[in-house]
Image 1: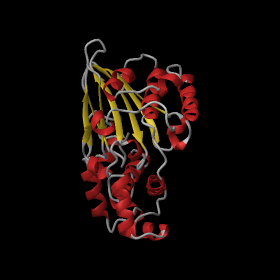
Image 2: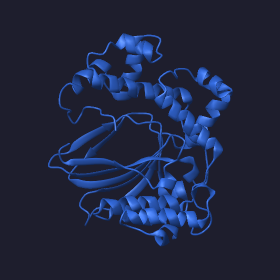
Image 3: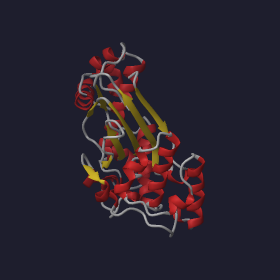
Length: 307
């Protein structure tokens, strides 16, 4: 990874209720590098250019929640600018609105996801007036790139990849992401807010091990909870619980390679160690013990890694 530069950046303040972070990658490699990622239950907006800027074509896509290990090969030089939305946070940007299960395991073009892009004027994020949007534009301008006038302008999806990936200055790339997302005029949706809060609880509250308990805590039926996640997250609450528990197991293996897997299986809500091993292997591509051995030594290109 010595020549692959990965970093995260925050979105503009009005976007942070929906956006987890921006992620930026630049690489210049003498030999190809295979990157493997265990995805979170969230949607990513990805702009990429594979090859030198003077000849490579910039492209953009929306990646729905991935249910399998994601593998990609990086070669030569290139650049990626991505948006990781909070679980449940992408729905407000989707045009026309549709259940997020329609995106699961799929990739959409920018036009399929956003239509013809945002329009100038009207309400800003959160139901504010255009003055609120202008304030957001001022924040983008503070990054050293675009001002309120550009944020307000119509941004066509087909123009966005080059606009995002083109600038050498990282602040200008981040500001271009801000400008595009703000142009889509996202609005607060109480149901989406509930889905985001529940997904965040699953991620951070290690005691959430059963869908039935989560539904009871929220005062809703299991079926209502399942419909909420299908529409706004794209996967079932059970799938989200299992995926975050696998991430927990990866974190434990990284911190303590000599993990007691039988004990951990019980802590994560599995009926026995065999079930944890099965889910871990299906998600990560190797067994928990093999993963633990791998993280004890410097990572190799074929070793799955969380991002």
